[in-house]
Image (cartoon, rainbow, N blue to C red; front, side, top):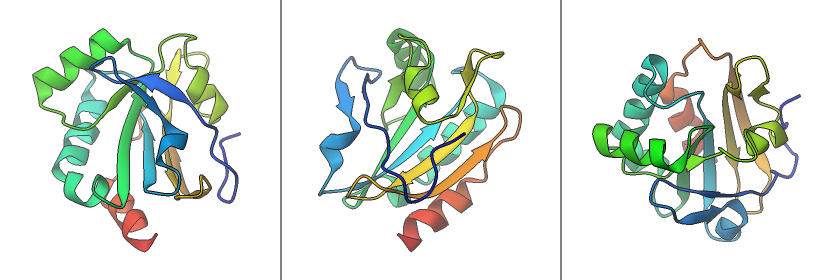
Length: 152
């Protein structure tokens, strides 16, 4: 079961595409965080979504909210993907233990070995305030994420 609205968001610390460690709880008290799980780097639907996130970056990654995208790919794959496609926000590697953070959020698909498209808006106190969970093949409408962030 995915983490639900009103629950404490599971804390995590993962490497971004530059090898920098990013901890969810480091944003407490300062910024909300939009945590976006996606199945795999270099895949069609994921690419469309991540480009849409980049286009909406001003609304999703600013002084009040941080955008963190998470997949089971390695840090090195994340770096190559970000460099190739021009993603400027953190792509976090939930690589090893494989899918541990996605599992904590209830969005890891064992059969696929990847996260489904789980989205969690975490407020400044670390509480989940909005969620959207889509299957691997069902892309998100980034406009919904922008609305949820604006409503927070």
